[in-house]
Image (cartoon, rainbow, N blue to C red; front, side, top):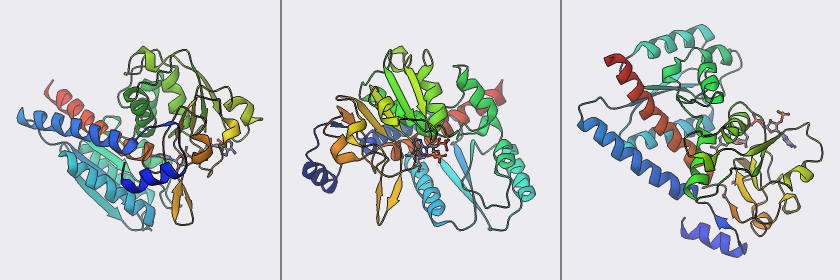
Length: 309
Ligand code: NAP
């Protein structure tokens, strides 16, 4: 955590443990880089991530650039395929068929959102499940729900990493997940109710409640949470009166307010009641990218083993 961030935290009189996603992600990236070196030393090809970027959305451009840089930092090759805003669904399907068939490409990501004229579901569904490093494909979702994941979806996987690396066990605890999207809320809940999703039984076996925009009396539910995971996309929705004293609070939300980014949690007041909390920025965001790298290496290993069997 840099000096500016530390000064900001001091001025807020934070008493909770700060779960530092930036530092944790840096550590994970070091581990991945070592694994890739060993993989290459054994004569295997470098993993490669292909990112498909359609249109000129400035936020998407930044996300893709950050992913490219992250790949570089660990020894993953990357290829960004830029397509104009007026690309059709058929054209994208053709491109994805090529990427699916290319043996040099380990993982494929389609940067969202796609322009309106594109059938995003058809496009996402056309990514080969073995290269689906975002873990959006129905086959990969199904495997995860059955407790035998091929890839874990990046953002909830990042949450599991931070909980397990800081030793915040969830077994037998009440975890409340705010949000039920296919990308964050639903897979998060599914991972937490498993008997073991790859982090040991202490980091699974939770009693999970999922809330959404139609849930009534949110505060009474969140106040019973030992662990609260907010993935809504509403700035400061979670206020201090919604927190059980000593709870662990994970803020997945990223909301632009003026020139700054804030989470779904009202960080200052909540951090005086919670026992541990992730900041925004510097929390789950960096871990999401680290998990994409992890999945790309895993995809490379899978493809290599299936092509040599
Ligand atoms: P999403 O698809 O818009 O889903 C938001 C969810 O929040 C929906 O299930 C919605 O309920 C629920 N919701 C909306 N208003 C609510 C309210 N007042 N009370 C309770 N629930 C409410 O968003 P998402 O893709 O899951 O992303 C959620 C947030 O996480 C966003 O801020 C996004 O930017 C951020 N995010 C961060 C990362 C990261 O790397 N840190 C990655 C992905 C997303 P309904 O289903 O009823 O509409």
